[in-house]
Length: 336
Image 1 (cartoon, one colour):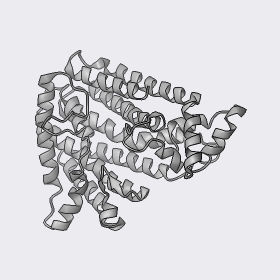
Image 2 (tube, one colour):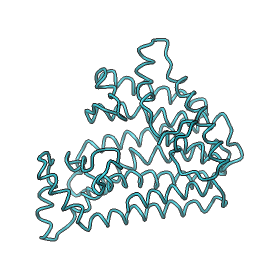
Image 3 (tube, one colour):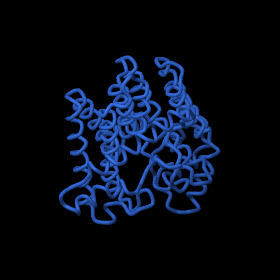
Image 4 (spheres, helix red, strand yellow):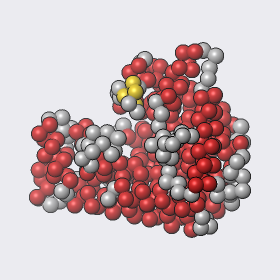
């Protein structure tokens, strides 16, 4: 689901032809600007900084900036374009670091930067992109600098939390939800906030859209957790059961682990560690798919999507609100 200017699908469900055309045109400008911002006088630095941009991606965050800007009077503002670049460069920078932390060899079907070069190049390239996003943010004024700093703080907090297990007396599910809110929800919330702010919306609309972005962005990640277990195909973007195999905590597994039913003893035993053995992995996957935790997880995501949609009451009925409501519906339906 690319966001090019051709016939590819946009990363958000846009059904109004005029709105879709405007967003495609603006996304083409964003794409061109992104490559301009990662240029260096040193060819190797340019190659490293553009490596994950070249790998593609949905460009969901900049598109959300452009879409929420349409709710205001200045959707075509240059500041909106700059904000769209800021959130994507921040996101891509975080991917370089993610791949080092995960020891990933592939990103979007291409070699990760750490696999193509090494961890040092990947880490420093991520740092460079964070610096570029900060430089761009400074052009939007001190309020934007504050928002960006707070967002980056939450994003890194989420990454740090992901590396540690919950402490004594800490709820593992709450810990995980905090990771998702920091790593995913924070930047999506800022994407929606930037669009509203620099598109000329009122403070009330800005706050509502930021809250919408936080909730629906986190819920989208949580629906991926469900698809990773439930899907027989590659809908989740990775082999089904990957998180389960690697012992990664997700919404369904954490909900299953709260069970006190003796009948769940075997599942809980399997979930206690990585499932590298194919037979044990298949057994755990089958047990988890049949467990009430799956419906519990789906209900949680649907509730979050409903909560996000309710925040859109501040917007008038029209193509922008319809697109944002449709995205929340997609989040709910894809986990069903």
